[in-house]
Image (cartoon, rainbow, N blue to C red; front, side, top):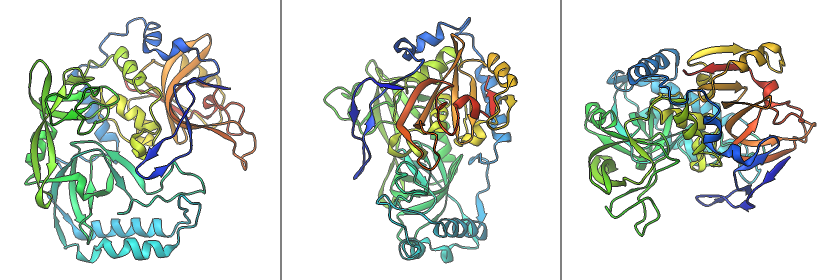
Length: 455
C-alpha cells in the first residue's frame, strides 16, 4: 500500500509530456513520516561524525576504484593520439547493434531500419576518420546526454516503456572533461570519451580547449566548489541569490558537480564556466554562485552523518534513466551522493556493486540466513545493496526491518508477469526491504545478490 502525501503532478521534458506521476515523498507501508528526516537515521548511529576516510585515504580509494573498474578512463593519462580504425569499428558496431534491434517509438510504433539508414548512417562519416586521430580536448558546458547514436530520437525496447530510452547511456556534468575523437558530417555531434562513458554528445554542449593541460587546469583545480544540494543556481549577475530572487539562474548544476572558483565575498563565490564560443572554442567566463547556496569549498568530511544527509536531500527527486529529465536512476542516485563526498564513483550499477569491501554474494531469490546475518553487520550510509539492475543505499534496522533509500521507477504489485501490474513511482524513495513482496518478482530482500561496503 502507498499513501500519496501530495496529489499528482505533470512532468515535462522538452516537448514531451509524460504520464502523471505521484508527487513525493511517498509514504510506503512500514514507513512513518518522521523517517523522512535524515536526523532520524543519524540519531540511531553511535558515532555518526567519525571520519571514515581522510582526504588522503579517499585519494587512495579512488585510485583503487580506477584499478578495479574497466570502464574508468583517466583522460589526463591516456594517449594523445588514437588509431582511427579502432574508433571506426566502435562507431560502426554501435550503429549495427542498435539498428538491428526491434525497437519502438513513444507512439508505440515500430522504428523501421530505414530510420537509421536515412537519418543516422549518412551523418556518421566513418569513412572520413583518418588513420591516426589527433585527439581534441574539451569540457561539458552544462549537463548533457551521452548517446549510443547521434540522434535525440527516443527508442524503446517495449511499447509504453517511456522512461527507458535505449539510446541513452548516461548524463555527464558541467566541467566533465572529454576526449573528442570524431564529429558527425553536420558537425552537430561529437563522439567522445568521458571518464566513465564513451558515446555521442551534442557539440553545442562541449567547449573545445587548445590543449589537455588547459582542461586539466580548470577541471582538476584545487580551488573548487562542490555542489552538495540537489542543485545550485549559477548566474552571470552578482545579485543572484539562492534561486528565489529576481535574477534568473543561468542554469543549476546538480549534486556532485565540481566547479572551479577564484574568489569570494560576503555574498557570492566567483566561479569559472566553460562557454562554447565561435567555432566551438572555449571562452572562460566568470559567473556567480551565492554563498547561501548548498555548496562546500572542497568536499565535506566522509562521515555517516554527511552521507545520509546527502542522500535525504534527494528524497522525492525525479527518477531519470541515464540522467534523462534531469533525474537520477538507481545508480545515478548513489553516484551523485558519493560523488559529492569526493568518491570517484562509477556510473554503472554493475561496477558500483564491485567497489569497496565485498560483504556477501547470494543466489537470485535466495532467502538465506547468511543474507540476514550479513545485513546485521551492514554499516548504514556506506553499504550498497545490489539486485539485478537495481541498487539501494542501506540506512539501518528499525523494529526488525531493514530500510533503504533508493531511486526507483515502479513498484510491482501483481502476480502475473504478462500483465506486469505496477505502480509508477519515478523518484527517490524510502522503504524497507519487503517492498514488491506480493509481486511475481519477489521482495527487494529476496532479490539481493550482493552487498558491498564503501568504508
